[in-house]
Length: 226
Image (cartoon, one colour):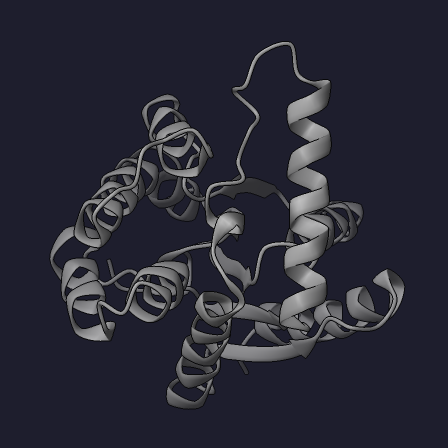
């Protein structure tokens, strides 16, 4: 899955839950569409019917404890289906794909948070995903305590407003602060390792300030090569 000039662009958003990824992805999509671009918005785990079912299993707080390797395997099962059905066809059609999380999340959450390390994550990505790499990854860095607190409030509100518990996605937010500190450090390690692809954005400012920073980075990525 190599990148060609006629292909679309693959842009991913990463960071802790509650850092504002979904909000910023939506704002970016609207900005790009206003410029006449064709944009596909998607997320992980999810994006396809099968992958959304896996998402419910992975994120629902009522799911019984999963072994770290089981969690990682399920993430990649959803990812492979997502690439085959959504991401790869959109890129081949020349569209811009904006994805809320990708393999960096597995390296941060399962590799860092669950202490599996980066090696199995990167090897699975190479074998199962053809080593597909985003053209740009926006890593939204935020305060661990504040982000997790926002994510917990959001998940609680969604669960209370739903007629069933399908929208309960609070399993990861039950983890302790040390878990999320490991996740954040794993993200920062990825950014140091791949500075050309991964761009760190301070997400502690206002929504508008953060959007402006992201838009500038994306415009550089989309600018035609001379």
